[in-house]
Image (cartoon, helix red, strand yellow):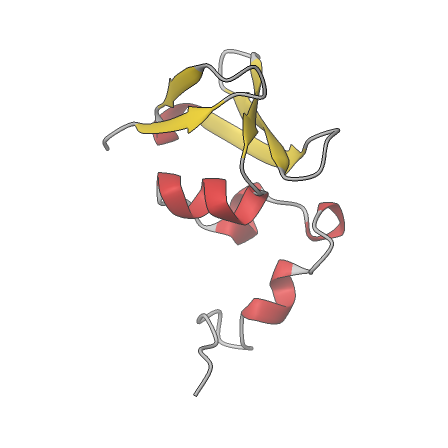
Length: 87
């Protein structure tokens, strides 16, 4: 799977391999996300949890705790596990 490039709060660019991601959680600052990697390292990037999951091609229900997200991601998915789309 290809890597994705994100900006850190310091303005540096960092490449993340989605295969290395274990968990996503909200950062301390608004609009930031902490990416936890298999190695145990944590990296903070300037993007929401949903934006990070989408950019990395990850299922947000598997990597984001619903209580971590202000607008619960569970509301975005219907009973069958399919993403709900606006008509």
